[in-house]
Figure (spheres, rainbow, N blue to C red):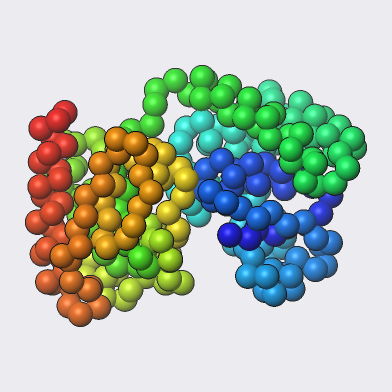
Length: 274
């Protein structure tokens, strides 16, 4: 996948590629172009623009583009949240936001000065972010709760319905396992029938817009549920195939009933396993 931003990067435009490479995209192509050309080149190359005005993965109020990535790709690990504060302070005028922010700004400025270009800058700075992330993980202490990853092709219906009912049933059984819904080829919007059907059961469709399955999803999932998708799982990682679920667009109730039957069995297994 292609990702594009402004050239002459310093903090946020190095932190975001690090995040993309380590947690989101297994084979990213990272492009840096003059600021005035980002959106035109993004459209021509089919690239995702970030850290430029008026894009989803950009600054919002006091938050920087790194924060936008965490929100869009549901990267809610406490260590990444802590790292986001360090990046935010270094990338904005709020250098006192964390004790580490001023140091990151100084180091990033130095790396920018001694690097041949943005690609060289990334190669030099990525080990710094690896170290900061390890520091944040040590500070965070308790590990993140286990997660079940639901994956369908478009990330717009089956996986969303499955994750919603998993959250409901897991909470009722006291099973402390999270659920995320993703797609291998995500659509632009959720399937209206899925959103309407879940709303009728007082359940929320999450995420609000389909998103791709990420490296972080696969690395952190306790269990993977596939609706007819081929998943490259970790060695020993269990993948459940729920290929018998009919299309939600063909009728919410039939798809929902089949999904809930599977979810009930999965939650029971996880409850029994403790």
